[in-house]
Amino acid sequence: MEYRKLKDEDEDGSSAADDDIENLRGKPLSVAASLGGGPVDPKWKRKSMVTLALTVLTSSQAILIVWSKRAGKYEYSVTTANFSVEALKCALSLAALARIWTNEGVTDDNRLSTTLDEVIVYPIPAALYLVKNLLQYYIFAYVDAPGYQILKNLNIISTGVLYRIILKRKLSEIQWAAFIILCAGCTTAQLNPSSDHVLQTPLQGWVMAIVMALLSGFAGVYTEAIIKKRPSRNINVQNFWLYVFGMIFNAAAIVIQDFDAVVNKGFFHGYSFITVLMILNHALSGIAVSMVMKYADNIVKVYSTSVAMLLTAVVSVFLFGFHLSLAFFLGSTVVSVSVYLHSIGKVR
Image (cartoon, rainbow, N blue to C red; front, side, top):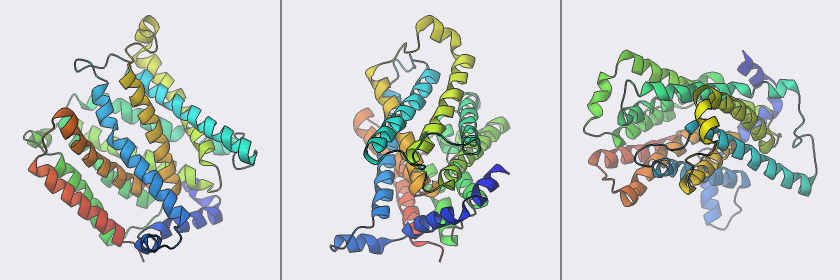
């Protein structure tokens, strides 16, 4: 299959990068050394910075989405917003490349021109995410919003399984246990009085939730394989091609779903300042995700987004009067234990 080809090509380079990334896991000693005045590992520092950025940006996504509504409805077209996100990510990648070209010149690793074999793999994750996003519209016919958030935690398990199958990365028994505990902790934190209704979800709803989890996990792991196929390749070049195809697929979604509305009302109808902030947040989050995949992996991304979910709930207390339940505190504790177990559970 194509992802096998990605793994086999440039094996020497990719294995070296994988070793570097693997060596970053479970390295409290490097942190201790930096606190004691020793040199900070630049790779560890870069990994920490992009992970922290992803956590902060992801935690504010849900808040901005809620703020972008008016009278409980979206006055703007969701498909045009998604297209705008992809276009902004593409523009930011080009701006970063322009700065690199000015300072360092054009090289084989940062030039946009490439081969068909390298570019042809980028439409695959874009198509997978498009299908997943379309399924989100249909699953709400079978499950409510709180139930959807709980079922969405299936992504955690699917990412771990596909990470092992596709990328052949081994997780220790402790890390597998931590992954399952993470899923349980996130689910517990999201429990509410109506959560029992999830067990009454029709078969179609469960099938859609499982398919969405598999699509999300496969798209994430496949994207990591693409990005790490050529470790020396500049991440902004890889992002550019990813986002170009994201624009193409989202343009198709506009034509299919909102063509008449866009023609009659305009592309930016219903946009507000908050909508613009939301689009900017999603664009920066997308870039942060790709950088985490480049310099860390999908497992780090899963933990980052899980912690972000907890931060969102805490911030919502002050912004929306959200009341934290006992289930939230218990779930937060379980998630914290999971993060700790994963950090000490490195495969030896």
